[in-house]
Length: 184
Image (tube, rainbow, N blue to C red; front, top):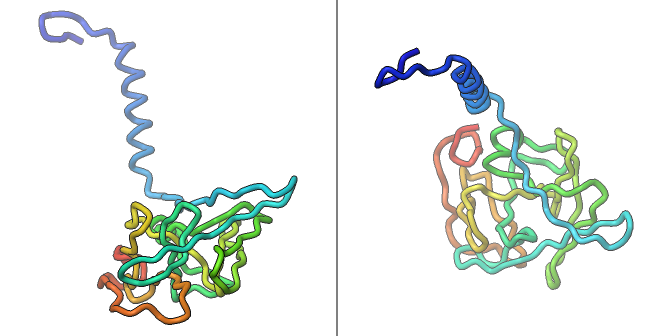
């Protein structure tokens, strides 16, 4: 092969570059996407026992809500049940479930009452639940103190920690399918 200026490019140097480019293209073009889950950090309280403490925060638009240990708002999906989730695959990428290592005991923040527990997911991970609702983050909430997932598709809602229902109208998108605006 001749380059500009009459220099010759060695063909053996091109083969590895083409192979690397092919591998990178194959990885980027994969149609399979594995769900992204947000693993909660847990504090060890003994040799085998682990615990996870949820937090709460007051947001201007919805009031007092449950948050993960990272301070990000937690949501529930109205089509889930305590025994089964309907948010898997691409849905779990947009709405990452709050998962913990098996055997972890989740706890509520001081002043918040209710039942916090765990449930198995189809992929074998363990998801935290509150009042029977499976807990999720929303990928659109890029920082603590945001609630961009509130009311999405009329099926995703924050977990209120107050006795009264927050006032205000939930935001909504119209994509259908309950997948956070991407039509699952």
